[in-house]
Figure 1 (cartoon, rainbow, N blue to C red):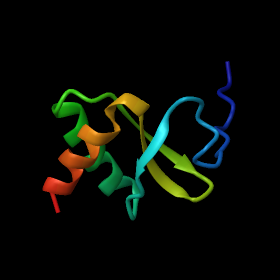
Figure 2: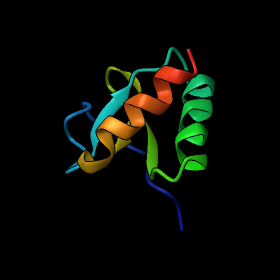
Figure 3: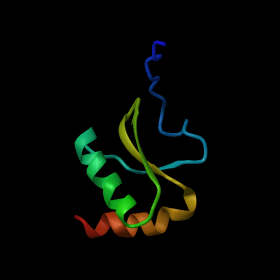
Figure 4: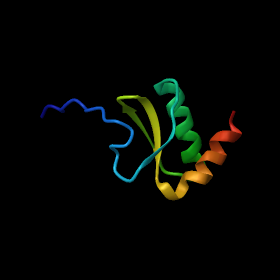
Length: 72
């Protein structure tokens, strides 16, 4: 089997998931994603056509914003 290369999409092409953060690079994005996961929020790091994005479920938006703003 040969894995097909992943296709980058725009941040709004990820179904119900919504972008919550736009990290400068993939490493920073993984750190933010881990912070959310450690707080009990399911988060995905996607490489989009507009750069890395942290994506979450809409019901977690306020809580995720609060968690991410504490780390600044």
